[in-house]
Each structure stands twice: as C-alpha cells, then as structure tokens.
Image (tube, rainbow over all chains, first blue to last red; front, side):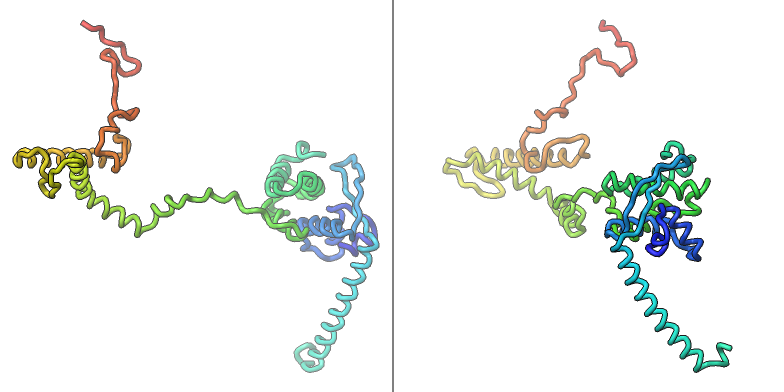
Length: 101
Length: 201
C-alpha cells in the first residue's frame, strides 16, 4: 500500500485497483481499507477529502516522511528475504539439475 | 452519494456493515463506511459475491486496521446462586428426598404446636401423647386432630403452584386464607363476559 501511494496519492478503492493492476489480484478490499486506516493512524499516511460529482466524497491518502522511512525499511527486509530465497533455490537447482531441467 | 442513493443490495450491505462496526466511534465508522461505498458501487447487484459477507468483511477490516475484534453479543444476565443450585442434580435429588419425607415434618410441627400449649404449665410433654387436658382419652383425640390438620395443610400445599399460596414453613397457619387471590368473591349475578345476566326472581 505504501509503495502504491508513494507513486501517487489515491483513495481507498483506487488503491485496491492499483494493487490488483500490479498483479496482486487476490487482495481483499477490506484488507486495503483497514491497512490504509492503520497506516494513517500510525502517521505513515496523510489524508484529505476531495469532493466528487460522481459519487461519495473521496478520502485521498498520501505518503508522509514516516511512511517513506517505513517503506524503505520494508523494502530492505524484502530484498534480504529475496536474496536468501534466491540463494536457497539456486543451491537446490545445482544439486538436482535433472529435476529442474 | 449516500446509502440512500446506493442500489438496494449495496445499501443493505452497507447497513449490515454499519451494524457490524457499531462499537467503533461514530466519526471513524462514518469515514470507513463512506470509503467502502466505492467498493459497493463497483460490486454491482451482488456485493456479497465480490466482497464476502458483511461479518467477514468487517472482521478482515478490523484485523488489517489493528482494531479490536467485534465485542461478543451481550452476555446473558448472570444466574443467581439459587438458580444455579436448583439446576444441580445432587441438590435436586436431595430436594426430592426432602419432599418425600415432608409428612414427617407435618407430624412434627403438630407436636410443636401442641408444645406451645404446655409452655408455662406443669404438664409433662411426652411423645406420642403429651398430657394436655388431664384426660388421657381427650389428649389422644386432641393429638390426632392437630396431626390430621397439619397433614391436611401439608397436602393442600402440595397442590400445583397456580392453585396455592403460602410456603411450607407457614402452612400450619391460616395465612393463606387471607392472602390476595386465594378467595374467589363472585357476585350472585355474575355471568361469563358477553352473556346477559339472568334476572333474579
């Protein structure tokens, strides 16, 4: 959610759609609304309301400095996890070339 | 747009969600519901197929928002110690036995009543036939009479609850007779509702 909002501010359902468009097709609407709420309460997001002619007023969320720091921390954790998993899988591939070929 | 302008299915889903989130502060709940309207509009005629049941949606929302789970439905009022005791099988069994032995109490209380007559006298209070009148034959009759009355009152007390008043402890006395609802006072001309009274001759 932080990665999506970092690119451009978005309202709840807009964030849901952008996450799905990015490939996270199974992400639940409720999870996104809840996560936005938690990040906002934690100071990682800021919010503002934009009136809309088409439907309900939209509450947009934008990332804060704290949110950026949180995102960087999450990115570092993810990259570390990814490296570890890559190494593990390459090791597995080297040991059983006939199975993975 | 408000819930009033949402399609019927979406409005019903939103109302159900509002109930699920009833414990949240009003402003926070209103903000959440306003945001969720966009998902409901996108979900079309069958929001439950896309978003799941309101209860599940609310639970997922709470979990991801770090909110406390929905409070349990108001707990049933606490039972009194007496109610719990009445349900206890051992107590029920003891109560049934005591009920069977009740005639012993009826006879005993007859002797207690008779003892009251000998208080302050020099008469010897003996069971089964205390000296009451100075005439042994009359004493036997008196004892038999008081015991019979006591047993009769005990039997009356065993009638179904709707038809009796009073308690075992008091049923040696005619208190029941003076309690409201124990006597039926009917006017001689009274007839069931809706019927014409018969004129007195």
